[in-house]
Length: 340
Ligand code: NAI
Image 1 (cartoon, rainbow, N blue to C red):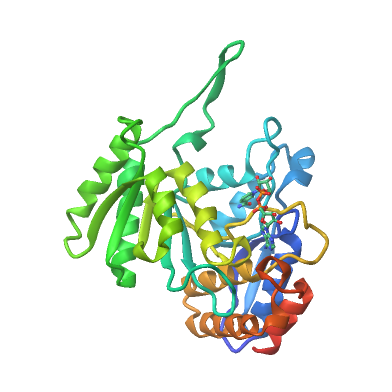
Image 2 (image 1 turned 60 degrees about the horizontal axis):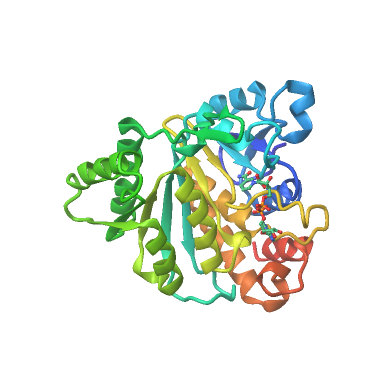
C-alpha cells in the first residue's frame, strides 16, 4: 500500500497488523499517516496465532526477512497463550533481530485524565535475555526451573543505550532498577555494567533503586524519575505500571531498537476483551508511528500528528472509554484525521 505525499520517495517499511485489537488500531494509524501526507510503501506480512498452522511459527521467517530488508516496521500486538502453546512471537521477534532496547516514553498526554501531572520519563528495558531467554525445564515431577540469563555484553549495551538517550534528550539522571540484594550474581552483573558505563557520562546523575521500592516511589511521585534502566522482566512489569500513571495502556507508545532494525509498537497487548468491538484506543499505536517517523527523519509529519492527537484528546467527546470518554475507535481516529 502506498499513500500520496509531498515527500520525494516513499519509505519502505514492514507492516504487521497483529491480532486481537491489532488490526483495528494499526488501520487507524495508517489512516493518520496517510492524512499527514507521509509516503510509506508497506510490505505487509502475516504473523500471530492464525499463521502458526500455516508456517509453523507465529513469527514466520518471511516476516523477519522483511524487517531485515526494510529495517523499520510498524507492528500491532500479538497474543501469546498462557501456560502452554507456542512461544511468544514478540519475544522471538526481539531475539531474532537482536532488538535489544525496548524504549517507552511515558509522558502526560494533554487532555487525558490521570492522577499525576509533570510525568516525563523513559523506560529503557533490556529486550533479549533475562528470564525471557525461554530456558525452562521440568527437573522432576512438581519442580521446574527457569533460567535467568544475564550477560556482560547485553548489560553494557543496554546501559550505554540508556545513557546515550539521556544525553541526547538532555535528561539529568539514569536510574538502574534491580533486585541485586537477592539476585546477587545476575542483577549484580547488570548493576556492575551500569556503573561502568555511568563513569563515561559524568554529566548524567546515576542512581540505583531496588525494584519493589521503585514501584512504590513511582506510584508516590513519578516526576522524580527521568530514565529507568531495567532488565527484561522488571521492564515489562514497570512499563505497564508507568502507563497507568499517565492514563493507561491506550496512550503509551514504544519502540524496539537494534543495531540494524527498529520495530515500533504500543506497550499494550492484543486486548482480547475488547477486540472487534471498535472501542480500543488507537493513540498508543499512532504515537508509536510518530516515533517511527522521527526515526525515519520525518520530523514535520511526526510533529503534525502529535499535535493533532493532542488537539483531538483535549476535547472530551473524542476520548475513548479507557480514558474516561465515550468515543469509539472510529470517532477518535476521525477527530485526529480532521485536525491534520
Ligand atoms: P493487554 O495490554 O492486551 O490488555 C490489558 C488491559 O488493557 C485490558 O483490559 C485491555 O482491554 C486494555 N487495553 C489494552 N490496550 C488497550 C487500548 N489500546 N485501548 C483500550 N484498552 C486497552 O494485556 P493482556 O490482557 O495481559 O494481554 C493480552 C494478550 O496480549 C496476551 O496474549 C499477551 O501475551 C499479549 N501481549 C502482546 C504484546 C505485544 O504484542 N507487544 C504486549 C503485551 C501483551
